[in-house]
Amino acid sequence: MTIFIQALMSVFLLLGCATLNPAGASEETVGKDVERLTMSYVWYDGDQQEHRVWLNPTLVAEINPTSVGDDVLKSAFPDMRQVPSRYRGIRLWAFNQETQMEKVISRAQSSGSAQQYYQIMHDASSGSAPVRLALGNIIVHFNPEWSESAVQQWAAARKLQILRKLESGPNNYLIQSSPGLDALNLANSLHQSSGVVAAFPDWLIPRGR
Image 1 (cartoon, rainbow, N blue to C red):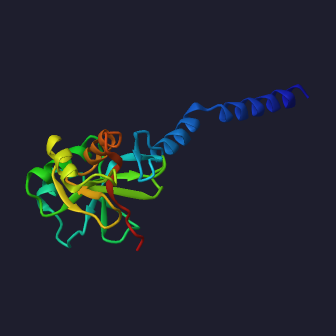
Image 2 (image 1 turned 30 degrees about the vertical axis):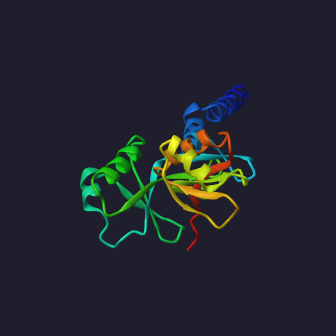
Image 3 (image 1 turned 45 degrees about the vertical axis):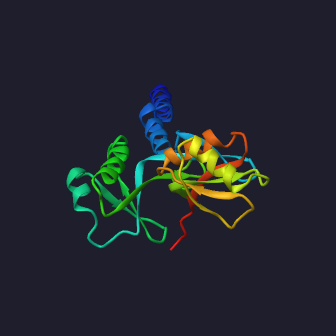
């Protein structure tokens, strides 16, 4: 009887150790952390409503990819690997190191790369959430009472280049900017400027295949 009780206690002890095993809990947590994005940024739409996007630090999007790809970038970053993409006209590349995302984009922009690589942003803090891309340029809604001359003077005072007037509203313009977070930061810096009704990146919302 004593031997049976000791054996039973040993079983309970082992079960308790398995339940509290920090290694098992750690593996589960790491798996969840991979899916969770932590770098979030605010942007404001045409109605001045606040929205938030999360930057994916381990992926870049290649727009209108070719069958050959960019040998310059592939040779510079040998750990680039293609991952499945559910978006039409977009190839996704992943990296072993998060810091390489900025390096890849910088190299692509400075080397006259034939390919177009962009930062990936999500509408929620999950890597599986819908994607949006800031390919460059921002949309600015000005006070509808402003004349075109007033808009031009506003842009010149800030050394901004107006690309064209949009047909989406009475006083909406497309203003040149760099892609990615540069476009987002510029829009946010302008959206409360005098005479500006709204400012936000010229988002590309990829379509599914």
